[in-house]
Amino acid sequence: MVKACPRCGAPAVEHAGDFWEFECGTALYVRRDTPSGVPEEHLEGPCAEPLVFITTTFTPSMLPPMFELPPQEHVAAVTAEVDHDDVYDLLSRTEPEQVRGAVGHENTARVIERLLGDALPEGVSLFARRNISLRAGDKVIAVIPQFRADKAREFTNEEISSANFRFFVTRVLPQWEAPSVMSD
Ligand SMILES: [Zn+2]
Image (cartoon, rainbow, N blue to C red):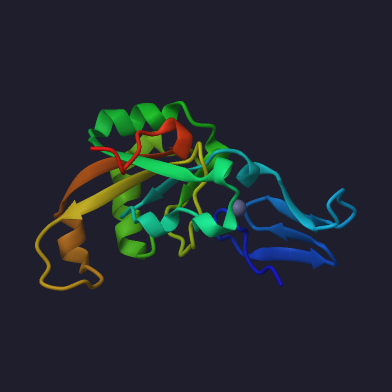
């Protein structure tokens, strides 16, 4: 039973038999009459295209488990710190419907929305608790508040609104295009 978009984690709004439609506008259907006889899942709509997620963190577990994918679909990730202007530039080159907010803490989401201002396409809300599953071609813009916290927790409103932020972009690419992590 599919309850959420397998790409962006948006909840299902419609379901009939082997067909699901999600809040993000993406549809998933299962094709059973495949040459191999093994049912195949197909995605159609915005989440079938490369996505740009805006988050407050990047973690390798956002990459799909390798055992679920054939070797040619294995991915690698490249992360670099960028500046505010780079984030603007990247968002200006991205189709608005490919941008997904994935900031799980509402006040942090509002502060980052103000920080990104006009660069954020109209109608994109950053506040969303999603399970992200990245594919080659996707990017993650991680906007990370800078202050010392003695343990992992949600930040207070004062901390968030007075924080400085660092910006990181992670690009997901096919593993065969990336340098091997195993070479010296
Ligand atoms: Zn989706």
